Amino acid sequence: MRNGFLNEGSKGWGGWENIIAGRYADSPVYRVHWGSKELKHLAFLGGGGAARALGMNALKEAALRAARTAGRKLGPIAPTMLAADVAKNPWTVARNRAEKTGAIVADLLARTDAESYVLVGHSLGARAMMVAAQTLGTKPRAPTIQAAHFLGAAVGAKRDCHALSATVEDAIYNYHSNNDGVLKYAYPIVEAGKEAAGRVGFIPGTDKVQNIDVSTLVKEHSDYLKTVSLR
Image 1: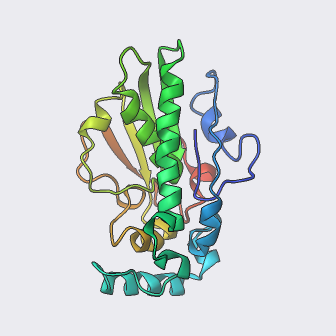
Image 2: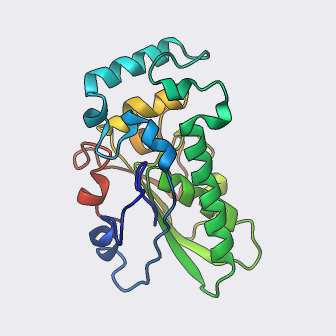
C-alpha cells in the first residue's frame, strides 16, 4: 500500500490501519515508503487539502489561468512549476519517482513465492501501484494481482485500461470524488489540463475497472483513508 502526495516522515500505518483491516483483516500487510521531498515545493499540493494550501479561490484562479494558457507554459501559478529544465520540475520528479517505485515494487514481488497480492494506493501512491501491476504482468511466473484499489488516483482519467485490467484477477476499484480539490484544481495545472481518474473515474472503463463515486464521503484529498471502505 502507498499513499499521498506528501507522506515523507509518516510512521507505522500512517492512517491505513482501519481501511486495510476492514477489508483484509487476516492478510499480511507490506507498506512501501518513499521520499517525496520535491513536493514540499508545491504548496498547493499539500497533504491537508488544496484549500488549506492556497485557499480554494486562489487555486480556482490558478486553474483558470492554466486553462487559458493550455498548450503553452502553465502561467505564473508557482515559480517551481516554471523550471526551465523540465527534468528538475518538482512535479515531474515526484511523478517519475512514483513510477520508478512501482517498477521496483513489481520486481520485488516477482521474486517472492506468494501466489497473489492486493495492491492499494492513494494519490501518487495509486500511480505507483498501477505501474507495479502493469510491470508485474510482463514478468513470467510472477505472482498474480488479486485486486487493486486506487484512492484519489493522481493519474490521467482518459487512458486505455485494458492492459492494466488484464493483469488483475478480480477487479480494479477506482475510488473518485468530484470534491477532491487537489485533483480538481491542482492536478490539471501540473498535467496541462488533464482530468484525474481520482476525480472523474477512468474514461472509458472496462469490465474489470469499477469506478466508485465517493463524493458524498470525500470532501478533500486527505479524506479517503478516513471515510472510504474498500470493496
